[in-house]
Amino acid sequence: MNYFNGKTVVVTGASSGIGEALAREFAALGANVVLGARSIQKLQLIAGEIREKGGRAAYCGVDVTQEAECRELIDTAVREFGGVDILICNAGLSMRALFDDVDLQVLHRLMDVNFWGTVNCCKYALPYLQRVRGSIVGISSVAGLHGLPGRTGYSASKYAMTGFLETLRIENLKKGLHVMIACPGFTASNVRFAALTADGSQQGETPRDEAKMMTPAEVARIVARGVRHRKRLCLMEIEGRATHFVKKFAPAFLDRMFYWVMAKEPDSPFK
Image (tube, rainbow, N blue to C red; front, side, top):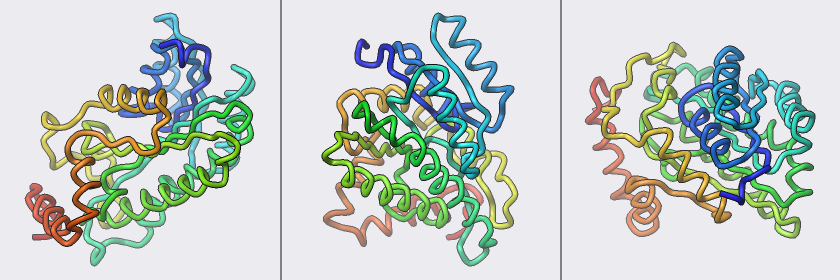
């Protein structure tokens, strides 16, 4: 726990789901947390609850697709706590539609949030992270390890995030910057309720069984351990580990397995 005491952690997408759980987890471990998301009211509530428990929290309304707002998020951390030690790029958007049917604006939207949101925040946090040999964490997905059918834009944006962060790691080898890509499996969070359909409308009710998924709190604990041990890749549950392993030796088999699993979803867009 002493590892995080006094460190400043910035979390995007912190108003719900994994982002909220990450903010609460790091605050409980003694870190200063700076929450960023579009819903200021939710951020106020979460930050207030963290403070009531003796934690240290600040917040900033931010749409990660807007470069200036990402800069203000980092500036908030610097004003409130003097710098940034850990940046967690968690803000994300999902989708569920066949590429045959999807409006291309849906894919543009996913790239703007998932990829460019990460780039925007990293750009302004990087000088502070370099000074302290800090950490950048990208919350990716199993869909960022292997293409996920019905999620072309989501997989593409997570692959793009991975390529960007891996390159950033290499560029900063001599500066001691730690970069970790975290890949949760299906998690019981709001990201699937807000997933976009073919025409860009929100999916609403999730087609998957929430009871069989990881909880955001479980994901947050695993991510915190990964940062503590300065891991490069943080895989969770059997889904991520199996995908990473099988892809090396039997990628065609993995294609078929992914197709079979996703086709079994209720109201699957393909069969």
